[in-house]
Length: 404
Image (tube, one colour):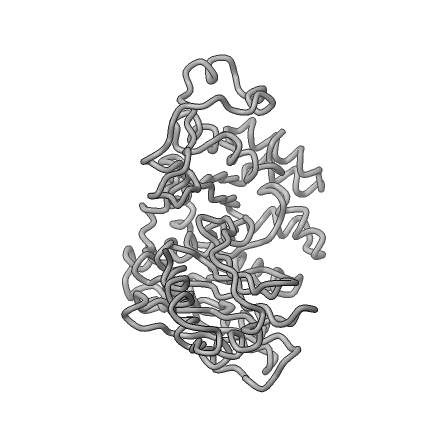
């Protein structure tokens, strides 16, 4: 039984101390290794859900009488304006040793039923930035490191929210710090700064003072950096400055949201970036996804969905070790335990450069990369499926837009 449930059963609703209740909710979510806490007023209850291994899981339902008090408590914790209701607010809270010294990034948003709270959990004890611990296959890791050792150009990462892009970028910077020490000038522009890095000049956006990505990056270019990390390329101005930086002797690492890895070119062209600039500046694009790992305690052989097996060869089906977690106490009945990385590193070759210059369709660029030896996200996932690490259903769900 959870700490929250135990507490609620020991007191009446009138006796509930909101501070204590919120602490127990956070503690329960920390103990199940959740990445996010969602507290949302539904029609009849105040639902508490936790994102565990990438999936929202219901934790407990609270009385609606608490739907104003709990957001109020989070506002106090995050140093927000507790008297304001009906507007979005953001804040941060550092929790004590009893919570594992975690940090919370809190977001309050008004809904028709009341205010919804979402708190992202950052656990410093589990956030390592060793590039060798990213879970990349050897080929991708070696090629990624090779790109990081280039003197200039753009390295872009692509993937949905929560796919490991930020961890990969921090790991890349950590690799450069370990290799070059204080002889290299490294700077970042982030929204917000998630983890402080020694010897790195980290700048955080301040929209209220009109200090966005483009303004910060423009200022940063006068700071004599050799390596620049930009949290995200969101608009044409930021993209143009980042590309110019890559062309003028800087190594730039950033992220771009796009449905597919090869689709990053079309995304940037839609931002009015000239194709010749993309072809000249981009070194490679790393697509990353996270899939749930089968629980090691309850994974058993199973028969996968026949419609998905049609995407495999007869040899793969015959020799594959298809396994799926049945659900047990160790994995809280989910059948999964932790997550593993799928990667797709598209390196820029002459044929791809020519295709970008000619504004060829994304599928054409993808096929050129495959012909040159690209290991797609789907291929990366299937290799994990055949060894029993995850299920083909999980891989298909995470790489749906990338399958042929």
